[in-house]
Length: 258
Ligand SMILES: [Zn+2]
Image (cartoon, rainbow, N blue to C red; front, side, top):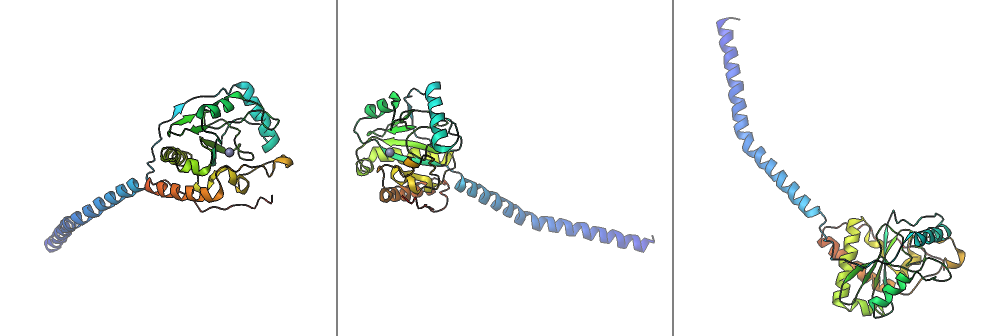
């Protein structure tokens, strides 16, 4: 390399270095801004998207659910759903009920008694009872099938509300507030869809309804009507959005042909 070429090469190297420095100097603030904006927006998206419904206070008041009752639930499941199981392994639905009475202890005693219902064991049951003062009682662990709604027990949590009618429960501010809090937390925790929060009276229209006993295929109750549950779900969706809990798609009811 001649001296001239060497100096040209040195000049080119110097220019390249200077350009690099200038680029770094000019690029740094912008890229730092973009990086920090990206990080801030990622942070705000994460903050915005993280579901934050809190688990409401729950008071345990267990009913007996020993080996015999579990065996009865498995036999019931085999007969009605086709598989012998007492475990609730794949919950997809919440069924809302009212007790038809005014006393928590009367409802609890009924569920604890494990008396034959419609000629069959196990006795009726619910995972939760919400009392008129808003206290949420849990009776059974959430991995156990409770017998509360024909056709649904293989996949549904059951929430009973102490009360004599839909309006009696929805008109009680403390009780209905607890109902929304508990249901929203279940939706969040188990990744349920709000459309699968149903009233007992909607059980036959649920795509999750399964009933192998022909005589029981159209059996349901009148607690929490379709109209009242539409209002309930609308409010639940509002709360879910407020707490960034995914609400899922709109309802897809089935014709029960009953
Ligand atoms: Zn019911």
